[in-house]
Length: 283
Image 1 (tube, one colour):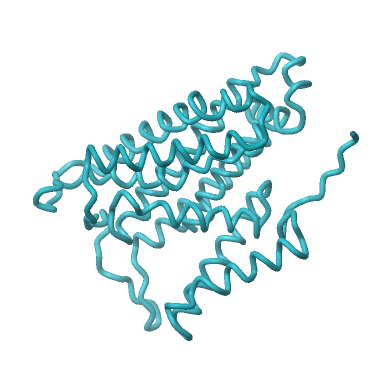
Image 2: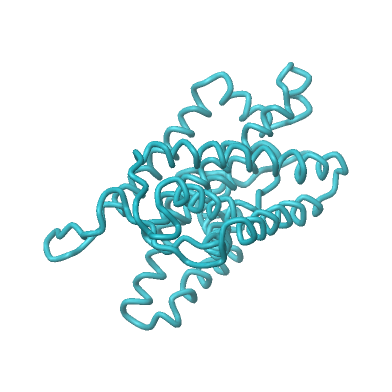
């Protein structure tokens, strides 16, 4: 579900600008770091005694600002150049800047983030699952389906779809193209930051926590279909289950292999993803 949530951020920016925000992995890390700093004392590891709503609000603000910065300083100049590759390097560079800034200002260490729901597993028929894991699943499903409904039912959501279909025609019809693209980047970064806050109690908070997650989320977007919200959920489940089952029944050293073998097969047999649609364009 963590992979799916980041991949959904890729989906939002690709829909409006046909670009992918490759800094989202480090934006996820930023969400974890900001949430930790507002909830836990970094020196003692003890809770600051604040409501968990405070780190949630702080993480949302950090995500929105990060998304606006990536669009302003990386994507918008690249789109003006009409280059097919500049935005890739620019968003990767923004991710590196975020990571290095956190290392210099915050820390390079790993820190434990206590879950607000407790750290004791819930036992169901002999199986253990943490309440934080259940929360992550529920929030991911809620975000994906809420944004999908927003895109289909609201005026602004329809504007996003219009820009996705044809930016120039949308502009001629009075839709502020740049504003729509900017909002999509802010929304995708906010979702990634929330993902960081949700996954932080299940792992250690560090400046490098988002790098691998961002790469795997991109694999998920290819497997499920970059333009399909449901496909991203399915792709996240496929990759995550492949890793877990391989680690549990074969070896943790091979857990990355099956998921990426599936990725290669999907690229060869169904390049648009399992739930992607083939698009025919007149040229």
